[in-house]
Image 1 (cartoon, rainbow, N blue to C red):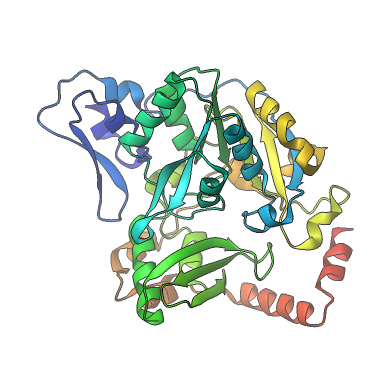
Image 2: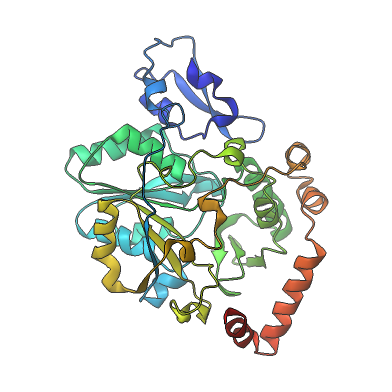
Length: 395
């Protein structure tokens, strides 16, 4: 079967398992913790799994550059609890207000990251914020999305570009189906995440109960991890100090398909209506408020449905239209895959709960230049000249 020969190209989306009429395909973790399809001997050979696969069926579309905007949510609280400018929560609340359902990644029991269904504004809070772990999209989620649409509900599905391509392929062209994706760096291993959780729990002497992968306590531009525990304590560390973030951003624990991702570049974001990312561009003159440290989003509308969604929520944002190149200027992940480091295999082989910290320090040592930059930023903030220096550098 073709899905069994995908090997490193498989994205782990679960579309094949969801499409199987007799449930003979199970998504099973490999040695690195990533899910791959396993087909039982009861297979009928119907090829529905092959038809459902977004990789086997991938065809790049002829597409113009998407329309780009820079924006942030006017509601400070919603913006604070979002990874960047708080745009996703506005779109999600719009769908909920019309009696619809929203699907997205949430940190669940035992700190496992899975896609769940949200049907209230309170539920949406679980979906806010980046989750730097590959989320599990179960057969039940595929079936739930289809059922909601069959019952006349509007549905917003959020996820990585490969997940969007998979679910869109399963659903087909539906008027009430909307999608929101993001410019993806790559998905880290659930096994490495579990190793990190075990390491942190041992150090805290308590069970981890919450995780914010993009905590803004140290400012939006200083990516931080904040974890909470059942003894009432918290732990927070910036990307230069947090062990998990260091492994993630050094590309040491990404899925193999992420190193040669086909869902990159114009026409490759199959099924995506709205694409979101951070506004990292140094271009001046577009929303100078981005320097307030609370987060600003770059937003791209790829379809008419995406434009309609943006029109429906833009009144709740401070925003400006911008050129695509300015919006994507410092986000090469729109076009290209993450680099596969030579140390990747060694790290994945050696990393265990018992050796987690040792493995990170061995394979993800922070370069001297980065350590010096971090020290300079801390000093500038202590002297209260950081924002002034940023404005001067932008000119």
